[in-house]
Image 1 (spheres, helix red, strand yellow):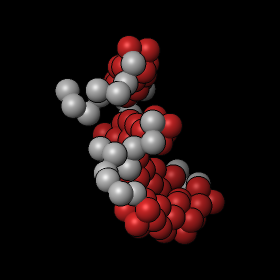
Image 2: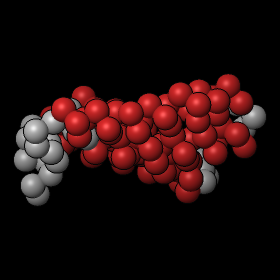
Image 3: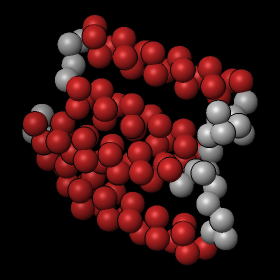
Image 4: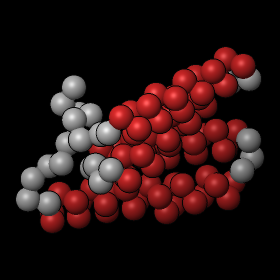
Length: 107
C-alpha cells in the first residue's frame, strides 16, 4: 500500500490494535455508529497529525462534526462550542496554509 509506505512496523501494529479495540468497545458497549465514527476518525486524526499528513485535516473534519453531534446529544455544550467555533474553522485555515506553503502534497 502506497499510503503506509513510510510507516514502520510498530506504527502499523499500533494502529491495527487500537482500531480493533475501538471496534470491540463499539460492540461491547452497544455504541452508535456515529460514536464509532467519531472515535476512529479522532484516533486517525491524531496519528496522521503526528506523521505530518495533510489527510489528518480531513479525518479531523469528520471527527469534529461527528463528535459535536455526540457531545450535543449528551448535553456537553462546551465541547460542542469548542469543536464548532474553534476546531472547525481552524481545520480550514490549516488546509489552506498547508496547501499554500507545501510545494507538493505529502499524501
